[in-house]
Amino acid sequence: MSNQHQAAMGLATVFGFGFIWISLFLSGFIMWVYCIIDTLKSDFKKENDKIIWLIILILTGPIGLILYWFIGRKKKVSNVPVTVEEKQMKSTASVNIHTNPESIKTEEPLRICEKCGNEMIIRKKNEKPYWVCKTYPECRNVIEA
Image (cartoon, rainbow, N blue to C red; front, side):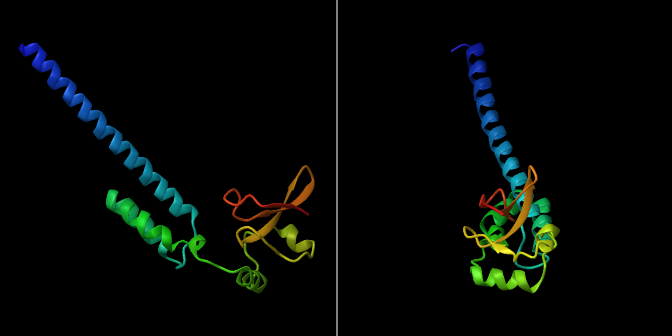
């Protein structure tokens, strides 16, 4: 083999491994950003868990990603099994700040979503009111008011 052929083979090997490393880095970075966004959007069982998981994710990088993926996601409120009765008791005990004021004015009781058990709020589209699950778009339950 000539020196030029060996150099070309060496260069191809370096570029091949470089592509693999760049792909791994980019996929890890995308997962890391996804976990940060998921943490920001989610509610957790304990009040300070969101801040703690954000600090872990930002400061520890790939290790924080792995920890959040296997431990942190299980600590979210959405993963806690709650019965419809518990949701109704909770919703009648206090008014959530996310509740649409129009649903209070109409004197209709707060509704509970049959699909996921979360509260439903009133929205208007083309001046026509309808009930939509508070977790929309995760739960797409919509009922005409």
